[in-house]
Image (cartoon, rainbow, N blue to C red; front, side, top):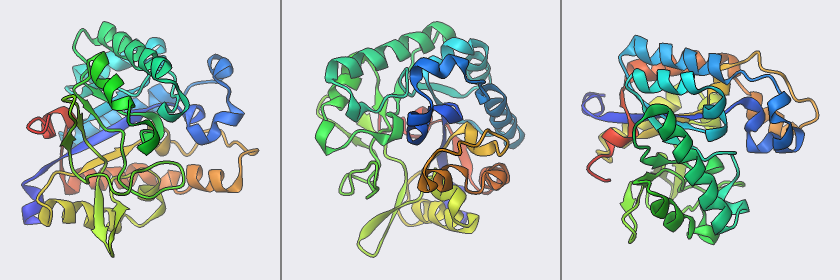
Amino acid sequence: MNAAARITNAFTCDVEDYFQVSALAPHFPRSQWDSVPCRVERNVDRVLELLARHGARGTFFTLGWVAERYPQLVRRIADAGHEVASHGYAHERASDLSPEAFKADIRLAKAVLEDITGAAVTGYRAPSFSIGTANLWAHDCIAEVGYRYSSSVYPVKHDHYGIPDAPRFPWRLPNGLVEVPVSTVRLFGRNWPAGGGGFFRLLPYSLSRWQIARVNADDRRPAIFYFHPWEIDPEQPRVTGATAKTRFRHYINLQHTQARLDRLLADFSWGRADEVFRDAA
């Protein structure tokens, strides 16, 4: 851990509520979102308290829809020294949109967040890492709208997303945009998720700790980790009509996530994505 301790990693949070998750979309149409009680504000405040206790900073990829309804929350994120970045406006997968619709969504989100914070928003993450080989045009839209970096490609094989042969570490596209992929480890000839999400909840914490330490010590690179505020909320309403697979993925170990995040923040050094990867961008 000595070599790993000298590296500052990027701690990122995708600010969305439980009913906005793509897998639950059939149960919560966007037209009904305003009628669903939100839990995102209390959960993000708990994340901010956790970061403050460890003296850590991070990046909050925030939905424009959430920001419009909770502007004071966005200001609290920024006032605490964290980066406010964009997760799009309405949590629509980039792969489901035309270039024109995608550009309109990410431009609106950027404008909403910048109006609230009074600062430039330079980072973007596509919902569900939904930039793949079929819609690489999205990178040109992201650059055209004015973002400097994206964290939207996951170099893994997954049933819903991923470009397994994409670079494991930040790379610059011809248009100048920098893509910052979530961390993986290379084992047995393939990339394995090492940057949080459902795997962080499903598997023992010791595995996540080992993976991030390996990225730091063996690759000599910063890791980038992500999670969602609803993942520290075991009291959230259960959607009984969801498939068994979706229920398993969404609800597994929610009661343990906050304690695991506490250990993660203690075991490694954490910072904002725009600062950790400044040289790349």
